Amino acid sequence: MASSEPPLSVKYDHLYPFNDPKYYHPYCPIDYSNTLSVEQCWMGDTVVPLPDLRTEDAAVQQRFQSWITQLVSNYSIDGLRLDSAMQTDQQFWPGFVSASGVYAMGEVLDGNPNTLCKWQNYMPGALNYPVYYWLIRAFSSNTATLNELANNIQWLNATCQDTTLLGNFIENHDQARFPSITKDIGLTKNVIAFTVLNDGIPVVYQGQEQGFSGAADPYNREPLWTSLYSTKSALYTFYSALNGARRLAINKDSTYAGSKSTVWYSDAQTIVTRKGASNAYLISLFTNRGAGNNGNIVLPAAKTGIQASTKLTDLLSCEVFSADASGNLVISITNGLPRALYITSALTGSDTCAYTNTAPVSTPNPVRIPTATTASRIISSTTRPQSCQTASTVSVTFNQKVTTKWLESISVVGSIPELGNWNTPQGFNLSAAGYTSTSPIWSGTIKLPAGTSFEYKFIKYNSTSNAALTWEADPNRRYTVPRSCATSVVVPGSWQG
Picture 1 (cartoon, rainbow, N blue to C red):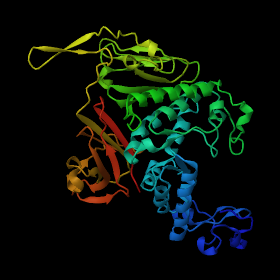
Picture 2 (picture 1 turned 90 degrees about the vertical axis):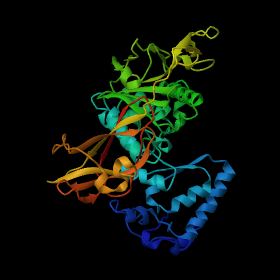
Picture 3 (picture 1 turned 45 degrees about the vertical axis):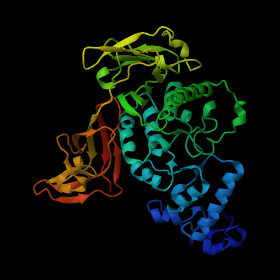
């Protein structure tokens, strides 16, 4: 609620429908280091204050729930963006979202996954501010590094309940537009591609597709009509191509949107991810080399499981790449642009770049597969490439950043037998072999069945007596071992609390 009077002179009877002081918290300026203060103190200033509603009160909640139910019904709303979610009592949101009957995404302006991910206990999704900050740092120049982004993808997956329900963005009305940070079109296209092709729901801010370049508010709130609503601008057509690639992947694989990306390759300037089913996956390449720069990266068959001579088509350029006789795949980087590769033999009919699939349709090329005896049977390989062998067990490496004292060690304790079933003496002990004062990393690798879901925490224990000393703070961490061709994953993290 907004008022034109100073905080202590607010005329509550002018505020409808909450026209009584009993509906509001007493005035106090916000201390953003204090959660209760953020939830109950007033936003705005002393000239235009925003009296803070008691959203923890049943009467206030009921009024909002009735209103949102009617609003969604009247206008057939598909989803909601919940502004300033952190400034509202958390327990207010579940009833509000339930009353709306639609998906909701909260503005949780915090770059720490340990903070942001907790909000999925109260609403389905949130704007993905952790990835936003990682992207800004990774693609702001061609001298930046992608290591933080590559390493932290697994951290986010392990911490949030469902990263596919988070909103991926790189611009909004509160943040500077990306072209105000760099004029490099190669960097801009890569950061946009990541927001569309990575796990989650793409969020595009009006004018982003026109290349608007306003910096801080209000300069980032340009009117769209100045662009003449062009559908031929470089970024508009690029968004169209990205949407086409994402839509194709979803149409080919009903599980695609809900699947999690796996980092197949990364270095300081390149990340390659795989997303989707084993026979219908999209390989995305992102680079911060910048416009005008070229190069090659190699994906070894031992890492990807790609079969010999498999062809993949870049859905953004229709360029075809072929694996060699061993299944190793070389992907070229041209002019610093991203790639979105799909199995060529799966492209048919009106699919994007379907003309690159030159395999015959009426004359199959049979593949002979020996059975346990010496007999053979024939299957057609015309419409489907050979899929990779999904790993049954995965080597999961925990890399935990935590400073320890003399005789302190770190253990992982969790809800599965391999992690002790919450029995601290039976937890999985990490090693300090790579620990330094500047990089205090405790690490350990354990083999777990693919698809295993579990909760876990880290504890500090006495390395002499093996007695537990300290549990890290709530909440429990969650992780699901990926089902993919990859036989190893890294789960990075930092001590909670």
